[in-house]
Length: 314
Image (cartoon, rainbow, N blue to C red; front, top):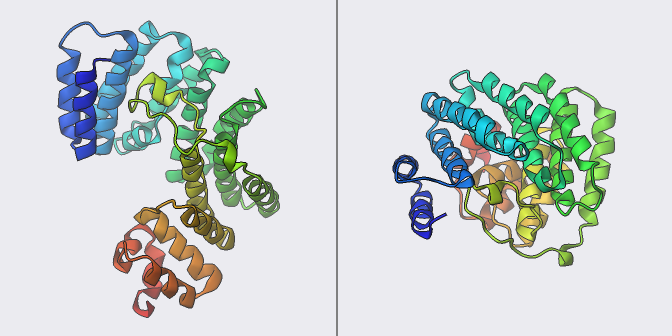
């Protein structure tokens, strides 16, 4: 990709100018012949812009074009690129278009070869749809996708993305098991997951990975193997643990993350406060709020509404 368009694109992303990014890429699309991966990048990010704007109609139109173009032009090993982002899937659901995403996902599963070279993007498409089902409380539809994730993880025990994949898979399976009221399996998987985390060899991980251009083939198909990537996976796990009433382990994970220098955003901090409340009581909540001046309590209740119950005691 031309450096000029990448620079201009990154500037719109940094400003949070989603419509400006869409306009930029549409203009670029008309500027001349684009290489295959370049056009795929344009399609992906135009969809992402509409997804971030929560505008499902133009998102659907663009993503349908992405899918149809991809069927004709992309090598089959790249089909999962089209269905690799949960924000896009969730925004499509706002317009009742999610079933189209599911069809595109199944097309990729049926037609993309299972290769070492596309294992990451295959995993990303599975986790995107499973996470979407979780967010939409469509728990009964998670098993099919979780099975795809499980089989993928079993393909190669030396896969460099294995740690990130296992944490992510366990997180989503825990969510499913909790809503299936399978307490025994939740307990077993919790034990396995915490054992996995306790034995992470942090020294073997680079602090940060090389940043690829967002939405590019190189980005969506690159392994999450840095300390930063694993911190993000653990943050996401800790948030889910709060949601499934594993408050003690959730609070423990959040503390480990903060001790390592990881900064919680408002959503994660609200889950941390919720977990502390449920596992340690109001005194610990007050201490945590005093220690972190970044967020006011009313802001946290937007992310975790149950916290309203203790608002007048903080």
